[in-house]
Length: 337
Image (cartoon, rainbow, N blue to C red):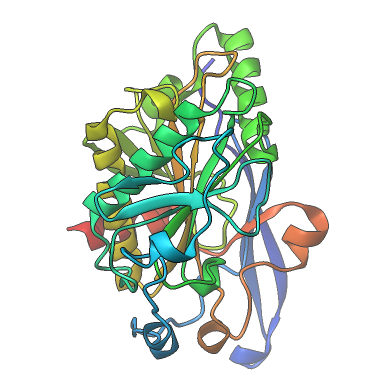
């Protein structure tokens, strides 16, 4: 059985006060995710007008180098010697240390590079690759009872970051978080039904199609068919590692390059803030693949007079996207070129 991209198109009819109350209609769509079967509504199609990117002055003014050498080694905590003898991990200008406000049993932070303030269109892939390598080392050193988790990234306040200096975060305690657990359950069901892995079939179905962004440096990039975000998210998939601990330096450098490229392209389109998640961090009980999600964020009150999370997501636990994924993919391909 091939990957199923299921959708239902709906039309609402009404009179339009913008056109002298002439009868009109508007389209919406309900899509079912081919792996998790979660619902995404495509509605309010077409985002509000977006301003050109401008550096937030308050961020630049508050870019204190607490996460940069040498201060990072003076003001950040260390892991207990009996848990992780290294205390902290360093690689070039990037440093990994425990979060003072943890989300789980282990909650590391990896400060990215030495610059306390980085523009979203000026991310250094080598710095990101260093931080990813620190996360790889951290999860490798955890016990097998605890090394299952997820790596994440909040870039700028509208995406959840409270400190301007770019930094990765992670959670680990041996539990697969909810969204990732749904994906793994979908992978198991797909393999039982079809006798093959989901991700190779997914890439074969998407390759060179309307949502395909390209393949380079060991990673394939695809705009999600049924996104969970208002601006469609991008899934990055590799065939070269099943989990983070297997990823080579070259593969992490390739992922870092994609993330920097996506951040720059989205910034040029007026969406400079994003989240990123990367998993699995450890071997799973099925054959799977390492993948990342780049999740654009548009919560900027001055820009949209709204939020990118509202009653549909919070009350129905269904996703909403306001840009047709195939149209966003075409926009991104143009931005790349």
